[in-house]
Length: 156
Image 1: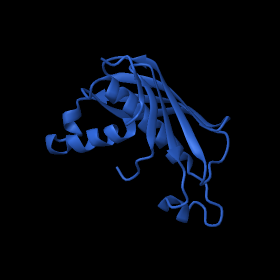
Image 2: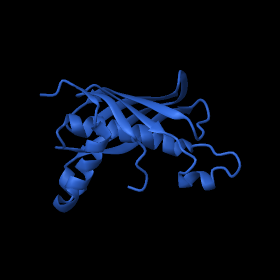
Image 3: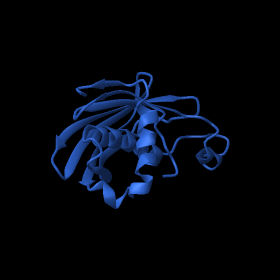
């Protein structure tokens, strides 16, 4: 994945919700073109950040027994621009969960301001198709970094 958009998971409640942050910095290469002289975080990356937080929620909750793949974005609304220097607070909550599908509601705030909200639908697949055994530890290392210091609820 080219863009890892989550800097830290602050709280993850197994099979319920996740609260994560992303610090938006001018040094990210996307701002060279979006837009020169007036950098704005693209809406697609706002959705991707929420999807990464939701993926962490689903995969960690399931002990990495399923790979969550974003299949559908419903009712995405972009309510305010996100600019370098902003800190995104991403909240994702599970609306419905089966063996094969997860429905998530995601909201992203800058401070108290809601900047994006959407319903995300994921398909849950066997991880071996996407994480070969030799690279699986790399993916889990990303989760270890994201979860360092996080409040983990309902974990044994």
